[in-house]
Amino acid sequence: MAFKGAPDSVALLLFFVFWYAGNMKYNEYNTAALNAVGGKTSGLTMTVATMQLGVCAVYAMIMWTIKLNPAKLLGLQAPDKQSMPNVTKADLIKSLKLAFCAAGAHAATVFALGGDPLFGQIVKAAEPVLAAIVGTVFYNKAPTFYKVCCLPIIVGGVAFASLKKGGDGSYSLKFDVTALVFGMLANAFAAFKGGENSRLMADKGIAERYGGVGNQFAVTQMLGFVILLPIMYATEGSKLPTFLETLKTDPSLQFNLVMSGLAFFIYNELATYTLKVTGAVTASVANTAKRVIVMVYMAAVTGKALTDEQKMGSAIAIVGVLLYA
Image (cartoon, rainbow, N blue to C red; front, top):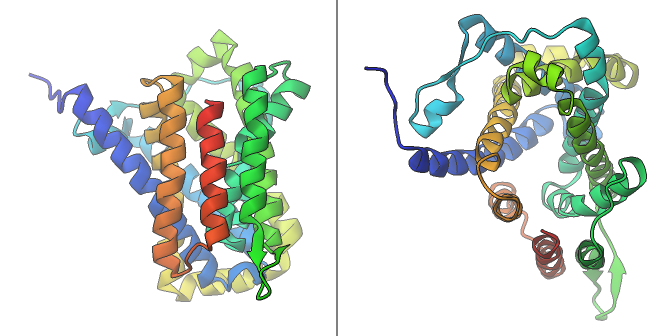
């Protein structure tokens, strides 16, 4: 008798748990990897982001070699069979726009979280705002009037989180510029990624040749790695020898770079498993709850507490996201 494993309800719960845990650990490993190369001023952030996708590419090739995807073991279920997709050269060319957007979203997120892991998460909560703008302008998918009314709440929350109270009781804008700029850039890339993903998967032939969302995600990360490589060389190539020397001699960088790449791949897979069997509202609530948990976790890991303004602002933004759903 074939091993069936845990019931789907138990597996779903475990997928949620490990999705959240994976996202939390990714943020921790990513922060540690960036610190190992000198932090946000080291000029190696793009290199770290690119190498993380390189780890994803290696992991995908290992799965195709053994023809098994072990992710479902985290739900106490038998691993899925996963063979290399039968995509054509034309399919890969059509996938490049999606891969570019996915790579851009990933790299910009690494820059944002490198700037300030906590404020970067708050800015990322504004993703629905960029999704609404991009969807309306580029994909003819305008949000409803009710959703439009929720957008100022999200923007207001992020804006309030950017305030700092002075000694005289007055407020002024004070925030990490890197986290704000790259966080919003990541949101824009993520919005385009959603639109391009819908366009690509609307082609039933391509969807069939990919053989599932797992293969599509794997190929997207591999293409993203190839796309980021020349950008990495162009922007940080002069510091590559320094990075490689540190990589050879620093166990912390070795460990955190590999683990951040693996955590990124696996938590995204688990998110796919959970969100495809839940409703849109449940998915939105789950994503929002995840962001809150990650912020609390990173505050504990980094030892940097959220200010009262950041707490209130993030709460306002998160309420806006929930209402938007």
